[in-house]
Image (cartoon, rainbow, N blue to C red; front, side, top):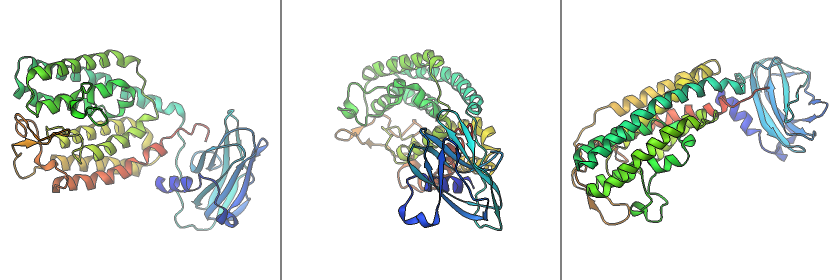
Length: 401
């Protein structure tokens, strides 16, 4: 599995450990070549202490002679430094490939391994830089299509507040918020818009009473803590303005290709931290619904990346898709009980009675920390996150590997 490859590479990516020097073969990378490997050796664990004697930074890959697969790597070796390259190899032919910071690529002579080896890594296909162009283009198209519905839903919420219908506003807050939460992989591209549209009160000098707190969660807090429409209208009007500006500005925003594999993991990692714990709940009790939107957003990212994942690790793609389906099924399971009415906790002071809290809001009595439903979701989400954590390494650019 890829995880074994990356674990082996990561284990050898730091300075060489002095206590292991007897088992490691020294390899010197220089201006004239990419080290000197033994011509023959037995299959199994291999360890090299690679030293850069050139004047350039260098990435070092252990590949097959044609470079079709990478078996271990040192992503960036500093001049005069030594790092360890370790992995376990099956019988076959292998070579070191050095990619220098000036663009020069050099290969060592091949090394032939014979015999049997337990736990040999499978290797993975390198990813050229331009391979991410198609997924990024597809994801940008999806985002562009998703922004107008977000704007329409935000306007609907503002209209409810404008006419003083807070019951309707509590119903319409969640659809608008979920429209934004599905856009998880683009947060880094949204810049200051994200804090203005979906920021929490954490870290603000005044907490939930900070005058600079805006966006969906600020609206949520006031909707479920009995605030009047007059206190809400500046926030909903400002929310519409920010979403409108984001929609207009989006064509000039860039989606970093490296963000997609990383965000596929981070979206749900953040959801585990903030949604399942209730840390991002400001009164509506809709954190599991938000988690569902995060799962949808992750599914879209995986969908655009699938053509790159499939030829490199089809088992990983199957595991991710199965995990997404399982967490989705968990979230759709009915739960016993009814939403409790009454008081909600003010995060910056005494408890507040929330107008309409716990009813007609999409609130979920199965979303509390420690509930059976939450524990089931947490377990399956943890397994999914383990699979998703392999994507950044699998889809890291290795143009000349």
